[in-house]
Image 1 (cartoon, helix red, strand yellow):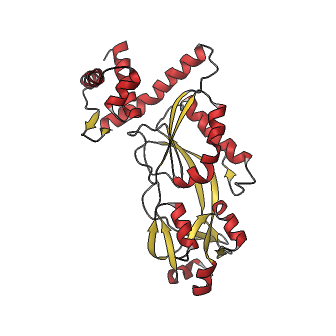
Image 2 (cartoon, helix red, strand yellow):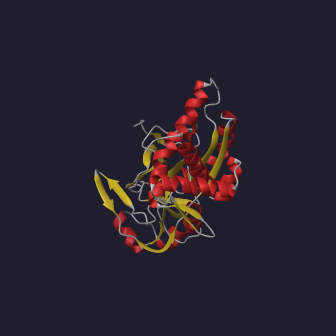
Image 3 (cartoon, helix red, strand yellow):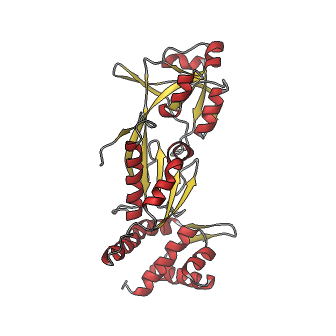
Length: 314
């Protein structure tokens, strides 16, 4: 299949639909008519012989074939934009709209207080933060990057590990007074535990501990499963059961005595912070800038994020 400018134009329309979420919004962004956008998609589908979108009255989503195509072309389009900016001598190579998928914990506890710093540093960026309990399909939904705690699911996404943080097992002081404190992971089966659903996999997280070189996956008794860290913390503080939390999020509560750390002879597993992006190629300048900003933020704030340890770049 020969390449021409019309093909690139039609591919640009595809990218606009994915980023905006609809044909109408893509038409507005590209200063085209809705029918012009539909014709561009039809021409692209005809030229490559696949259907790109599933369309309903409520949503537009990529087909599996469309998703694979977009995974390949999105970094190339970003690379063209970066190359043009650099060739023109522009000082604003980091520019454009950046759509970021984050979990509630990372957004509220770490990112949100510093968003203005990022915007001030990169005045050419328009930033859209979407807080989601579940990762979802970041390609089909047009995200440039996701930042999540926890092991990423097997997928075509590139996963770059940025940081890791220790977990602690805690309960309210009232819970400990009423039910006592477990001394080892084996004791947890006799206590009410609050489980957390992984935002990556959608499955309940296992409770893994280590002591003297031995790793143990605890059997726990749980009647309460949540999918969001603030709910987990609130339920734990109210005495609903024992929870496992990221250490820096409960440091003050432990110091105040509102929470009690349990099984201090056992080390809880570490949670890793990953940047996920849909590309096998070098990510766009705006994506690289956001990743570097997060790393710099966590390294530069040791007083607030003391338990984070930077991971060497891979």
